[in-house]
Image (cartoon, rainbow, N blue to C red):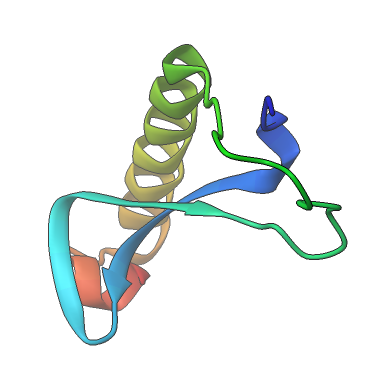
Length: 73
């Protein structure tokens, strides 16, 4: 099963733990997964998500002066 980009997200924090690269979150709500044995995620889309997150962080840092990921999480 191929996972569309709209169901992907990168989070910096999961269960109180942080990750420099982030956590790949796949939203499977409402998906029919019966019989699914593999999930395929296009790594180009994951890289794009990472770049978008970095761009948003940079804009927020510029606008609000935040210099710490905790301020932007």
